[in-house]
Image 1 (cartoon, rainbow, N blue to C red):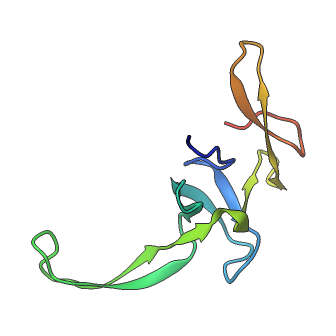
Image 2 (image 1 turned 180 degrees about the horizontal axis):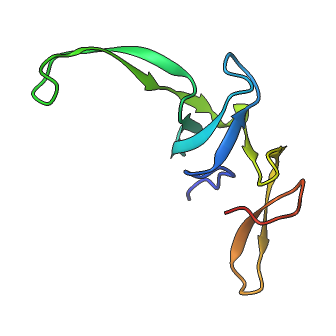
Length: 106
């Protein structure tokens, strides 16, 4: 059975602990096996890349590294961090909502 995570790709999140605390960005990818997310512009690392057919030059590149999901919180439409809940809408479909403002999340 697949884990049900509160954070999805495309969500705007804020880092709440660690060296990147306070930074905000959009979620690029979610790894359900390791409970980690990659956030745009956050946790940038320097990676040394070997020359290859697709990149004959090789060299040093900067890429975003994953952060554990417990270190981030979703930012709602009001711009504040919030916990995420699940509820059924009128059509009977599960939707995510902000527990702080009680509004549905996209």
